[in-house]
Amino acid sequence: MNEPGPPDAPKSNQEVLFSMVQAIAESQAKEVEIKRQELEIRSQEIASNERIAMKSIEAQERFHINGREQYNKHLIHRYIYVFLTVLLICAFMIIMVMNGGRDVIIEVFKMALAAATGAFGGYHAGKNKKDNSEEG
Image (cartoon, rainbow, N blue to C red; front, side, top):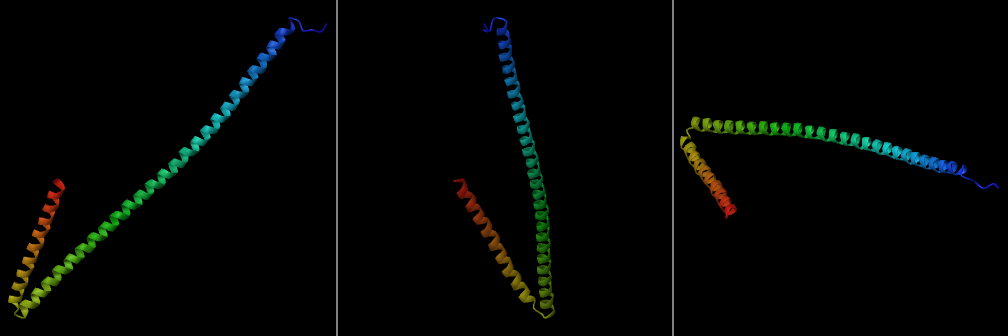
């Protein structure tokens, strides 16, 4: 009679328990490995996002520096244009005064004043008309 008796039953229960504990330990080891891989991937994502953010900041810095340089160049060109225009007007007036053309200077000033008044009035009339159409 080789039938397992009651003393063998605890051994089989212990073996079943042992195999269950072993299976649980293996699954937990797999879970830990998966978590470790997820953490590694997440750290790579964070490093990648950091590199992207740094490149973006550098690009914005270059954009702002270049924008300021362009604006300053624009201002310098504007001042040069205004200076040359005033210089040409003064040279024209001096030449006209030396050649006896005071009447020509007065007529030019009258025309310039009329043109400036018309341009100023037209600009503000159009601006007021635009503002009134936006309100209504």
